[in-house]
Image 1 (spheres, rainbow, N blue to C red):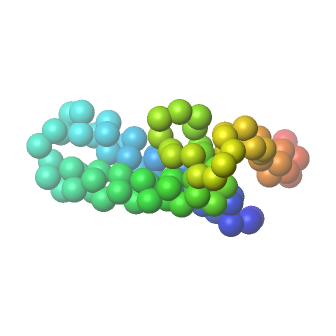
Image 2: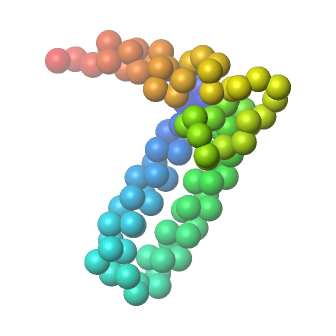
Length: 95
Protein backbone atom coordinates (compact mmCIF):
# COMPACT_ATOMS: atom_id res chain seq x y z
CA UNK A 1 0.00 0.00 0.00
CA UNK A 2 1.39 3.42 -0.89
CA UNK A 3 1.21 6.68 1.08
CA UNK A 4 -1.78 7.93 -0.92
CA UNK A 5 -3.79 4.80 -0.21
CA UNK A 6 -2.90 4.90 3.49
CA UNK A 7 -4.05 8.51 3.73
CA UNK A 8 -7.34 7.68 1.97
CA UNK A 9 -7.85 4.76 4.36
CA UNK A 10 -7.29 7.05 7.36
CA UNK A 11 -9.80 9.53 5.93
CA UNK A 12 -12.39 6.79 5.37
CA UNK A 13 -11.91 5.41 8.88
CA UNK A 14 -12.42 8.79 10.52
CA UNK A 15 -15.40 9.56 8.28
CA UNK A 16 -16.94 6.30 9.48
CA UNK A 17 -16.33 7.22 13.13
CA UNK A 18 -17.88 10.66 12.58
CA UNK A 19 -20.90 9.15 10.85
CA UNK A 20 -21.43 6.71 13.72
CA UNK A 21 -21.07 9.50 16.28
CA UNK A 22 -23.48 11.64 14.27
CA UNK A 23 -26.10 8.87 14.35
CA UNK A 24 -25.54 8.34 18.08
CA UNK A 25 -25.84 12.07 18.78
CA UNK A 26 -29.16 12.15 16.92
CA UNK A 27 -30.60 10.10 19.79
CA UNK A 28 -28.25 11.28 22.59
CA UNK A 29 -27.80 15.00 21.90
CA UNK A 30 -26.58 15.84 25.43
CA UNK A 31 -23.82 13.23 25.70
CA UNK A 32 -20.82 15.48 26.39
CA UNK A 33 -18.26 12.70 25.85
CA UNK A 34 -19.70 11.87 22.41
CA UNK A 35 -19.81 15.57 21.50
CA UNK A 36 -16.15 15.95 22.43
CA UNK A 37 -15.19 12.84 20.44
CA UNK A 38 -17.16 14.13 17.45
CA UNK A 39 -15.29 17.45 17.56
CA UNK A 40 -11.87 15.78 17.96
CA UNK A 41 -12.48 13.43 15.03
CA UNK A 42 -13.90 16.25 12.90
CA UNK A 43 -10.72 18.25 13.48
CA UNK A 44 -8.62 15.20 12.59
CA UNK A 45 -10.64 14.68 9.41
CA UNK A 46 -10.23 18.31 8.41
CA UNK A 47 -6.45 18.06 8.86
CA UNK A 48 -6.20 14.78 6.91
CA UNK A 49 -8.33 16.10 4.05
CA UNK A 50 -6.23 19.24 3.91
CA UNK A 51 -3.08 17.11 3.79
CA UNK A 52 -4.55 14.97 1.00
CA UNK A 53 -5.64 18.06 -0.91
CA UNK A 54 -2.16 19.59 -0.76
CA UNK A 55 -0.37 16.39 -1.75
CA UNK A 56 -2.72 14.81 -4.30
CA UNK A 57 -5.51 17.24 -5.17
CA UNK A 58 -9.08 17.71 -3.95
CA UNK A 59 -11.35 14.87 -2.86
CA UNK A 60 -14.42 16.69 -4.20
CA UNK A 61 -14.87 19.29 -6.88
CA UNK A 62 -16.55 22.19 -5.11
CA UNK A 63 -16.67 24.12 -1.89
CA UNK A 64 -14.49 21.93 0.29
CA UNK A 65 -10.93 22.63 -0.76
CA UNK A 66 -8.88 25.51 -2.05
CA UNK A 67 -7.21 25.05 -5.40
CA UNK A 68 -3.44 24.87 -4.88
CA UNK A 69 -1.35 25.76 -7.89
CA UNK A 70 -2.03 27.33 -11.25
CA UNK A 71 -4.27 24.58 -12.69
CA UNK A 72 -7.71 23.25 -11.79
CA UNK A 73 -6.48 20.21 -9.84
CA UNK A 74 -9.85 18.44 -9.82
CA UNK A 75 -9.28 17.44 -13.44
CA UNK A 76 -5.93 15.81 -12.76
CA UNK A 77 -5.94 12.02 -12.80
CA UNK A 78 -6.50 9.73 -11.03
CA UNK A 79 -9.55 10.76 -9.09
CA UNK A 80 -9.93 9.20 -5.62
CA UNK A 81 -12.42 6.57 -6.82
CA UNK A 82 -10.38 5.71 -9.92
CA UNK A 83 -7.37 4.25 -8.11
CA UNK A 84 -5.86 1.12 -9.66
CA UNK A 85 -5.61 -0.58 -6.29
CA UNK A 86 -9.41 -1.02 -6.21
CA UNK A 87 -9.13 -3.40 -9.13
CA UNK A 88 -6.05 -5.10 -7.65
CA UNK A 89 -8.01 -5.80 -4.46
CA UNK A 90 -10.92 -7.19 -6.47
CA UNK A 91 -8.63 -9.51 -8.45
CA UNK A 92 -7.09 -10.87 -5.26
CA UNK A 93 -10.39 -11.94 -3.72
CA UNK A 94 -11.12 -15.66 -3.71
CA UNK A 95 -14.76 -16.33 -4.55
